[in-house]
Length: 171
Image (cartoon, rainbow, N blue to C red):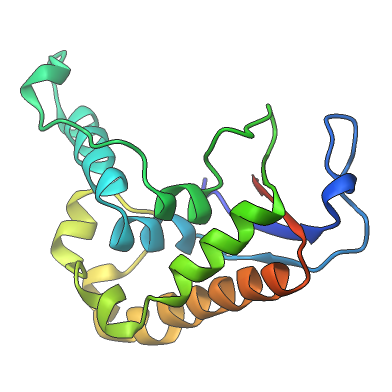
């Protein structure tokens, strides 16, 4: 089963624990690409994925101390995966000031920066949720990952320009 990440722009006062968040704001999804985009940008996500892959591959119980340390969570993992201090049971939300910060951060990323950690063999070994990584490689990156990243970057910019909050959830 694959997890799809959804993002919705909304008025800051539309977000509360009782809301279903359907205030008519723009909603996008990144299909299964959010974890890959996060992995490409976030040192924290890459380290977490090393731990995950080691546990999946291990036939014996593992001592987590035997693995490299995981750095503190960074804004890339927070913005792309919807992690952060405003975490509810079913979603994470970002206040307008956070959305502005994430829009600026994501706006600094171009294709070459996104490509820096692109390694299809490592992505395969890390159990990232994309099929045909090795077979489709560059095509998967240029025709799937890059357009979805651009979609996310533009989404955050529109939300920042409108001084909106953003809610992120997974299904």
